[in-house]
Image (cartoon, rainbow, N blue to C red; front, side):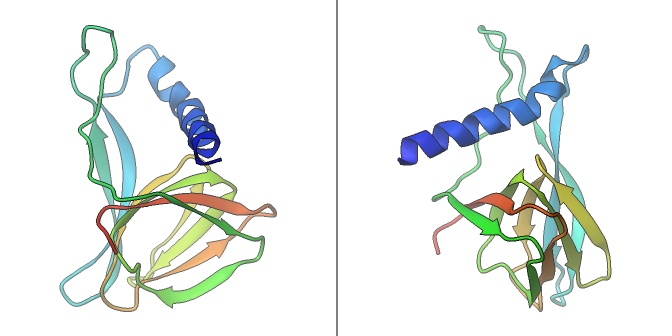
Length: 148
């Protein structure tokens, strides 16, 4: 059911983030990679951070909420390759299993292993190429930041 899948994804994310919060010095922010199109439609990578707020009464630190409209899951089999394509709408992507590689139009290529967080906003131009570079399925959660 949807609730079981949500719980599974939540536990996976908590497990992936546990090393970040269990260290002696808790991080002030969680890193992510942003993919975007510049004014001429060329896609690029940039680094970003999601800040954690101050500790609350329960001892937790919470990030600001980001608007989202839904969540979907995508399974890309070993050997999967997608040629140039822009994202249809801005979306957060979290790699749940496997390892993928993305090439942006400026020529940079990056690998995104399990646990990677991306904000994909390259809605203009030719977009990016996506490849499953592992021997297992690449499974991602994608969370649009606005309605289609």
